[in-house]
Image (tube, rainbow, N blue to C red):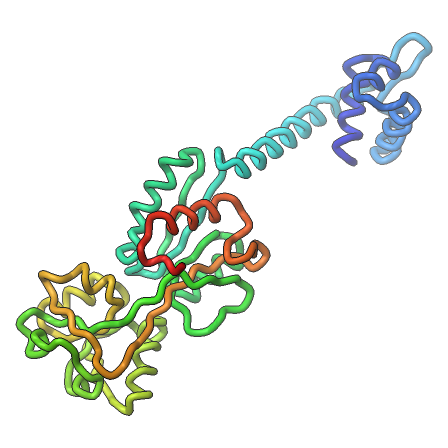
Length: 302
């Protein structure tokens, strides 16, 4: 059963005449008659009582007429919704980030700016671990995911949007606070506050210390940036974080550069691999959001 057959059926039912119905749907009468016969054969029942003067619905035809109108109405609504989504007047945009990135990217402000431009598009935001967020992109639950990556993930497309050097942060009265720069080897005896081992930033730092032949003491493992910063602020440990985040904490934390090692923290946006259009997703809403981010963000890689 096809939509065009239902359109033909409704036309005949409302016009009660094959010739007028054919003119209404702009096909020849023989094609219209063939379409109705095929529909009747598929359903296994006659839909019309035909005479030389009149065409009227059978009992089965009357039942189908109500359902056909509902189906065509739903199809029209679906078509209109798709056209509206393509024009960014309706639809949804699902965004995911690992914890701590909203502060780095100014995500609340970006979402507010996007909503102001496209109030008919519903924006949904969720936070989680990288693997969980990537699964949501693959399943179509999220359109864009912002996260640091170690390796190229399978089944999604990625584009790097920022590259930040990691710097040391410590309490303002910490012995390292007045140094302009510090070597990784000099941090071996320091208690560190860091993220859990599966976090991308943690793996990046672990590899840097291994490459430098240095070891470090992890005193606290946390799963959110606010807790990490507060523990450092209270003098319970030091941490390595992206410079943009660290500079935003100056006045409550000391920021110290790394002297012998430049650890580059890379931020990526991931989206469904089927949506690849150059270095941007193919769908209108995520493309518009990334364009807005490029215009508003000073950390967006160019």
